[in-house]
Every structure is written in C-alpha cells, then in structure tokens.
Image 1 (cartoon, rainbow, N blue to C red):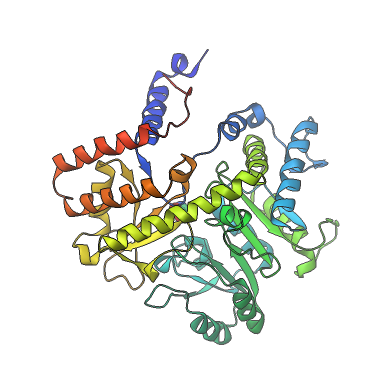
Image 2: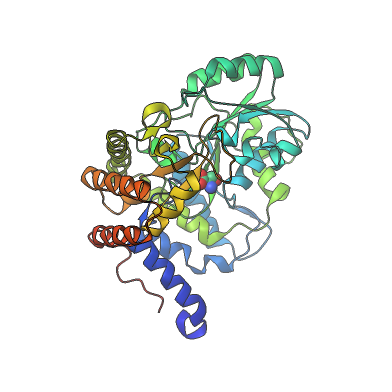
Amino acid sequence: MTLHTIDPEIAADLQSELTRQREGLEMIPSENFVSPAVLEALGSIGTNKYSEGYPGRRYYGGCQYVDRIEQTAIDRAKKLFGVDHANVQPYSGSPANLAVYYALLNPGDTVMGMHLYFGGHMTHGLKVNFSGTLYRSVQYQTRPDGYLDLDAMDILAQTEKPKMIVVGATAYPRQFDWKALKNIADRAGAFLLADISHIAGLIVGGEHPSPVGFADVITTTTHKTLRGPRGAMILCNGNPSTPLKKVERTRENFPTLIDRAIIPGLQGGPHNHQTAAIAVALKEAALPEFKTYAHQIVLNAKALADRLLEHGFDLVTGGTDNHLLLVDLRRKGVTGTQAEKALDASGITCNKNTIPFDPRQPFDPSGIRLGTPALTSRGMKEEEMKQIGDFILEVVEHWEDADRLVLIRSRVKEMTDCFPLYQGIHYV
Ligand code: DSN
C-alpha cells in the first residue's frame, strides 16, 4: 500500500510541495535540500522505537540498534566539530536552546542575547519567548551599519553581569569574532552560548571560524547549511561521564548537565529516524566535497550581493561573508512584505525581515533576507546568481504587475529545470 492509495489528499499536497521546491528558487537562508540518503533515513522505521535515555542507558528494551545509530551520530558530531561531548536528541533548535538555559541557569537569572529585530533569535531573550519571561533578558543590538557592536556589548555585559551571553543570529551576514566575544563573556563572568544554527555547515566546511575553544556550549540546528534533517545538537567540552550524584554547574560538568536537561528535564523519547538522518548528514558533511559545497555557498552569496549592489540595492553591512544577504529595500520603494509576495509570485521564495533600527513594524518590515544554501545544493553557481539578481531587480521594479511576475516565473522555471531536484521521487 502506498501513500497515494491510502491518503490521496496528503499525497497530492506533497506532490504539489515537491513541484514548488523543484520549480522555484529557494532562497530562505535557513532552508536547504537534504540528500536522498538523508531523506531515506528520515523516512525510516526508526520512528517506531521508544528509547528514552542514552546509548547503553535506556528505559526501554530492544534498543540495541537505535543505540548504535545514536552512538554513531554522537561520534560523528564530536569528530566533525572537535568537541568532547555531543547530544543529538534535541527535537529542534528552540528546544536545544531551552535545554541549555535549563542546564546552566536558574529562572530569573540574567541572559544577554541579540535582539530578534537586529538579527538574533526568539530564544536569545525575546520578551515574549520563554527566554525573556522565565529569565531576566537584556538585549544587544547591531550598530546602524549592521555590524555587531562589540564595545556596546562589553558595556552592557559589565553593567548587567549576565550569567550567560548568547551569540548567534538568523539574519547576520558577517562572521563572528569568537575570541573577542569570549573575552566579553569572561570579563562579565558569564557563560558563552554560541548558537551556530545558520552557519554550522560553513564552520565544518572551513568557511567560518569555529566557536570551539571559545564558547562554553554550542547549539545548532542540523537542517540549515549543515544540510541534514530538521533537528538539533548541543556540543560542549567537559567530562562526559554521568555520575548519579547531583553535579555543580561547572564547565567540567556541562556534558552531564546538558544530557540531564534533555532527559529527564525536557524531552521524552528521542526521534530515532531523525537521529539516523542526522548521522547520515554528519557523514556527508565530513566528506571533502562538503568543503567545496560550503565554499560555493559563500561564493554564490557574494556574487548575488555584487549583482544586487550593481542594481542599486542597499545591503545591510554592505555585503556578505557567509550564506545570506539582508536587503534594505527602502530606497527601492517597496516594503519587505510587498517584495516577499511579488518574489513568491515569480517563483522566488524568501522572507521579509527587519533591518537594524527598522522604522517599520516587524510584520511588515523594510527588508528581505536572501540565502544561497539551497540553490548551491542544486548545483547553481555565480552565473545563476547574476541572473537571479536580475530577476530580483525586475520583480522589485514591477512588483504590482501580476502579468510581468508570471513571465518572470516562467523564466525562473526554465532556470530550475536545468538543475533537477529529487529525480525519481513522486507522491502521486
Ligand atoms: N526559523 C529560523 C530561520 O529562518 O532563521 C530560525 O529559527
């Protein structure tokens, strides 16, 4: 019995989504296309098994094979990132960050993170998120030019004395100076949490400096530049043994504290199909060709940035060093929402985004965020980026002309047809 026989409604929707992915230009910087091997592991019978606990220490029988799968994922993560300890069970990025807060802090402790509207993340202390309600959150911003303001961060840290500083971003087009950030944390007596969700693939590919050796704890999703399934990992150094006694909140005990925060602290059974797929993605990320891939992501982002600058677009920080661009649309006379909708109608998927000190509201901000990881996974290079920069200009200049957008969409399809996606997969 196949999906389309049992549930033609869902099969048809999946087929439509597959067509959308094939025929469009996927430019949301946090999205990617997993390999067929990752997809196969994710859709596997691993989903059937309960296995609360960790390899060799489970609350259920029959875990001998999922133990092997999880241990392989752990070993690969440790080797790839060069850390003592990896927890591969967080269901996704927000639960991973929640687990770190739970492990390292008490409710009411002060946490310092980058404001969402300046490129941070909800879990970095946004007032309506757990991180801004259960904890006393103080937020830092970028400078008006979009770069992190290390001096202001240092002053804020000295004034507020946070127990943890969170560094990481969803809309920051430049590299992080982990050494300088560690100095700021040390001077304040704070733990440093690096959330590398967006840039994990660039780090293992050698395109972005690693926070290992600087950050006390590192969280990352596995489905962005790392090109794995939806999921997350928590990485740290310290003593990975897990004594049964109560442990103090010292760096040496971070592995134990984090494992305990995940289970029994916050989660139940790990998603073994997800863990298997993470293991596969980590194997792929360790291959030499992944370095080529990561390098091409950055080359593509720079090529797109150059083309957009030639076309008179303003880019926050003036360009990019990583996989994404933050476009300030104010001089082009469209809002982020208008641009997102017009680009969508043209087969180009991106998301509206605030820019630093945005004069508009977050639900209709002044910018859009564009990324190259998914396009690079399809094999696109600088030439295509130039063409896409031309498409974006045309869309933004004719955003109210529905017929023009349909024409652009057909040209987008001509381009994507040259970069086949998931050949052989179909749901109807
Ligand atoms: N939703 C992710 C992103 O788009 O960056 C962050 O969690």
